[in-house]
Image (cartoon, rainbow, N blue to C red; front, side, top):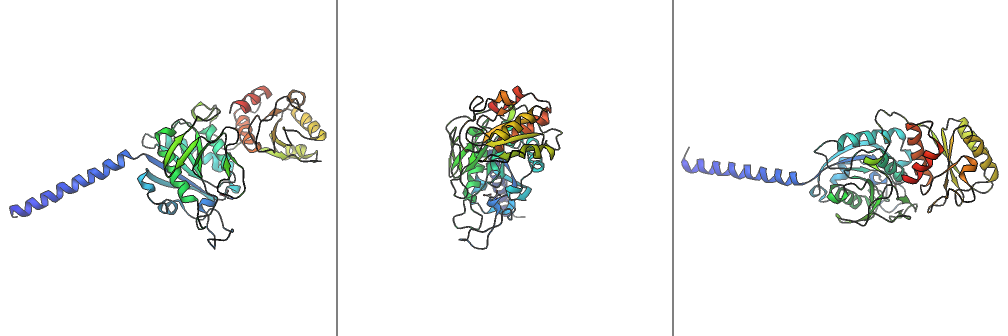
Length: 359
Ligand code: ASP
């Protein structure tokens, strides 16, 4: 081999090694984020870009990530398909799978954050469940969309981009489980789906949103309210199911036998989505008193979307053996009661009241 030729090959090899080291160095500085997909409208498809009809949970995670420009510049991404359902079909079974997998992933030194794609309908329940069962202060961010992936002005791609940015941000450490949607960051405790279909459906009416995320720029305004993640007393280790807890929806002239029917069907706890300040008619109140006397907990929440249920309002909980949900809406109070009963099926009314206030 001529000297010149040898020199050329030598130089090419050096350049190649330098290039590979450069690419590796770039990848090393990027955080590692795992995206767990569960379906929802973000993975939905419809026949027409301008029609309102679509089917949730159709697109798989790899395709979803690939559809978002520059998302791989935010983090080294790995996708896993945990489920692919509309979140109206979300279940305790999937919650347990998610919480266990997230705990496993975040225990690894080379995983910096987790994003979960989800439907919007029950997103706040999943977020709250994970907020109480994830044992890490690394970021966990739920991402969803109000418009399907094939709709005109689909919101999913930017929500996913922003969700990954939040999960990759060092500012997100210790913020508990978050929901990133429509440029806002919400805490699992405070977030509520307030509107049925528009892109600004999610709000945190009592506490305000945690922060904002604009084209990947993350800013936090305050810390989340309530005990969460590493400080939570709940765990999913070895848990394979949760006790049944049902919700009764209050209304004028409501049937007074609903609580009894639910208990007969196997409910171990009842949430009343009461009228106003967790109120219910006289017959339901009597039924609640009868049920709590047998040791089954009845929690008074409200069908009103915003506000706190007073422990001593028109109903004084002590008189009926009931518990107030404080500011948890019925669906989040249900999550907490299920976890509380799973941990201690004989939990006292006082302890349960404390949990409702503190989480
Ligand atoms: N039904 C859908 C779901 O919850 C709605 C959505 O994702 O926006 O999966």
